[in-house]
Image (cartoon, rainbow, N blue to C red; front, side):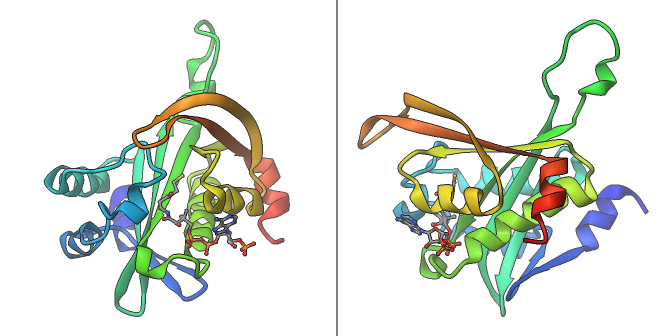
Length: 196
Ligand SMILES: CC(C)(COP(=O)(O)OP(=O)(O)OC[C@H]1O[C@@H](n2cnc3c(N)ncnc32)[C@H](O)[C@@H]1OP(=O)(O)O)[C@@H](O)C(=O)NCCC(=O)NCCS
């Protein structure tokens, strides 16, 4: 079975959540809340075009560098997680395979009706499991506005390190220039943290 086919058929459990690869119906469910202001307030990619997002997420099923998971609680689609793989930084001479496709970024979104129930943290944990335990990546990063306290708490509880606090680095459409945070964790740090 191809790696992509395997991914399509997999499911992950996290607390009361079941996470699976997207299908057209589950993406339609996400689109009912994806552009809600309670979701977009602290995002950089605020409003998405529904057709474009659907195409992008369905295309991800055939893209080993882009993973999307849809989280359900009972039958409700309550959250999503995304992981995108990229090259690490490396010197251009020598063995480029040493740093090719070895890092990932993650993000996560929770339906406003289901926020503050721990689901964001559970989805983020699955994204790290996917990155390290299954895909064998060496480093995962996540960024957020400094004022996105819930997101920062999620990343810190997972053992991610605040590596950069950038003063007035990101433009917020309603609030102007705001501070940003970058967090990261290495595979070996995850190994010692995941059972905490
Ligand atoms: C940010 C988001 C993912 C958090 O998910 P959630 O399911 O609501 O959060 P959780 O219930 O997992 O709680 C996360 C933690 O943050 C804490 N928290 C929540 N709001 C907080 C606030 N305003 N200030 C400080 N801590 C806060 C919670 O108490 C919890 O910590 P605890 O486990 O120690 O009690 C969710 O609100 C969301 O989707 N927001 C819109 C999209 C977004 O911003 N995504 C992140 C992109 S970087």
